[in-house]
Length: 82
Image (cartoon, rainbow, N blue to C red; front, side, top):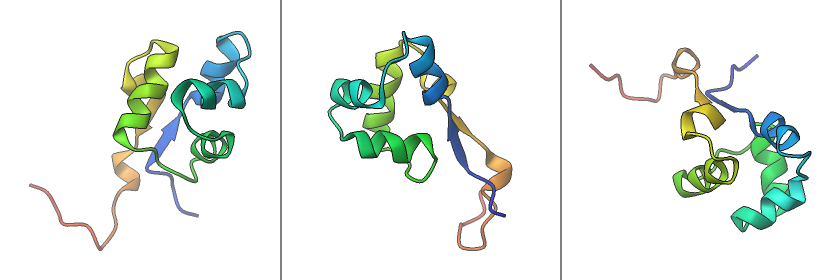
């Protein structure tokens, strides 16, 4: 099973924001509801701009909305960094 490189807390943050719907969040960040669904399910990684817009809606730092898992990012196609 592939481990996800980037996960997110969007569903939890929506719930904590007065049970905001996916549609309401989508309207606030100018994307479709289907885009929010895909991001929440980690099937789509948002652009950096969209990630910042989502974090801004919840008034949280980007790294509290999206979590990068470096241990999952070990593919043979990526160049090794020193």
